Image (cartoon, rainbow, N blue to C red; front, side, top):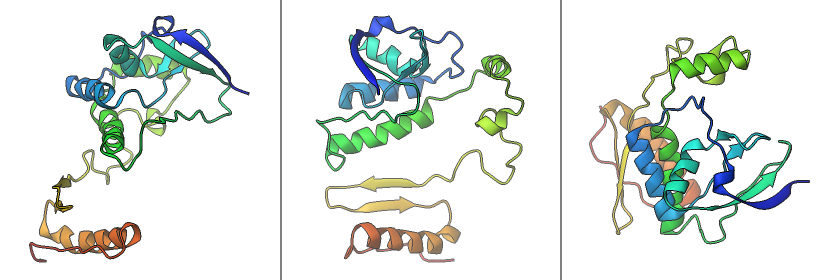
Length: 196
């Protein structure tokens, strides 16, 4: 059974060997996320209150004046859920929370190669790629950067999707139609740009 208690942010200690250096843009997104939608994810500490996950979130929270911590003590066999009773995923604030949660993860991770090597040695990891670290020479068929798809929306409930080439249009049209029918029966999908 999880044990819950109130603590202070200053009770937590940063990981001096954090493998994520972060990025200026990612830290800016993280700050925007905490300012606009509040804290949504939990952080993880070890039994000595040293942060395993959430160093950057804790840093920004401290800079923005957060002082209170609700600690849930567990042994890793229970899923800890942070329930935001003030958010609805279908509201503007809920949608922002969803977007920022993913974009911060995407844009605020840069490995510190020296620390990765040291931490992997401590963890007795021989192949860093099996843990998602480093470049992926074992996956040459996979693009390091996924194809970019941009969306724009207006108050008229229109979504614009720009694809890198016309070759992708037929597949995208089929996939979009399928997804729209699943989520929004009766929605109309209009495709412009012609097929090659």
